[in-house]
Amino acid sequence: MATDKPHINLVVIGHVDHGKSTLVGRLLLETGGIEPHIIEKFKKQAEEKGKGSFAFAWVMDGLKEERERGVTIDVAHKKFFTDKYFFTVIDAPGHRDFVKNMITGTSQADAAIITVSAIEGPQAQTKEHVFLATTLGVKQIIVAINKMDAVGYDEAKYTATRDAMAKLLSMVGVKADTVPFIPVSAYEGENIKSASSKMGWYKGKHLLAAMDDFKIIDKPTDTPLRVPVQDVYTITGIGTVPVGRVETGILKPGMKVSFQPANVIGEVKSIEMHHEVLPQAVPGDNCGFNVRGVSKNDIRRGDVAGPVDNPPSVAKSFTAQIVVLNHPSVITVGYTPVFHCHTTQTACRFVELVKTIDPKTGQVKENNPQFLKTGDIAVVRVEPTKPMVIEVAKEFPQLGRFAIRDMGQTVAAGMCTAIEKR
Image (cartoon, rainbow, N blue to C red; front, side, top):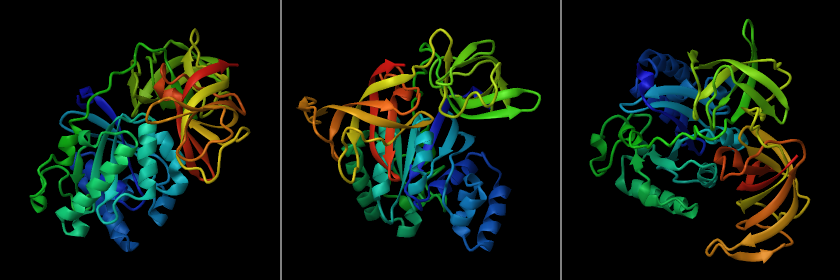
């Protein structure tokens, strides 16, 4: 059975129009994750709308609005197999307004392919995506330098884009020599499944071979269970079914789970993933689980399920280390932007600026600064404006990291270091 292969959640990110969705469609086609006749059907439809090159992208962009606009809005999940792994691919939106959804997608990923066009090279948004991916804890990265067909498979274009991306990665602390930079044409299918004869100058691995070099991250099965809820459904004949990704611990039928901050308890009846019933769900599994004793209106996206004897932490306030990525003015006490943490989006108020830190030495730069500006690394104390689950990043990295958004952009990112519980 194919699902005996180890499972990796892969996020594909990149600037809008850099060919991300086309790359995902191509990967699905080359691995048998989608039938060729479906691509043909999409090709026809795309050509009728004068968007011939979008055929592959339409595989992931199921929403009608996305087809009309040619951009990815929601986070789509598809699965495919390589020689070594079973991948669930999360196609994350590249468009500005959709970074919120991208954060949710990226926080579920074990590995990332960052797509960058050889025509334009990295854009401001590519930088934001790279920063988010690394802040949200994605450690394994491949850079796919796409649209090589559009630059005539020119090595100089590849080199220039590679160098720009390497510089960008080193800015966020990723060692560029550990990252494969692979020239591809997603549209033409070059260097995806086999070495490309059009790029004889490139001596590295083709994309699927490089993906088989990803390492399986040790699953934190010994840590207490945490399942952030992405959606809640009522299914006729079954009942209430929350859907989410198991971040830590093991989810089993018969368990009593506590949903926080909703503060309701239910019993797990059954677990399903990709329409198959599972005996248990482990970290990395995106699953639905039927819960008895909980109604659809009791819980919502952003709640987190955990064991009754070790429920998720609901913070009255928490201390965090943050990096201010991009703030048009300054951050002061009283500032209340939205914190995106696991699946919750909660406005939190800055109540204390504890200190700033010198990134080069790690030493304290200033205690109790008056304000924070772009580029600052700081320790702050914040209070959620409504009950919110957050954990200390050391114990539960997946529930302790967050992005801070305001005015349609990511202004800061960080991780929780201590919690004052409610």
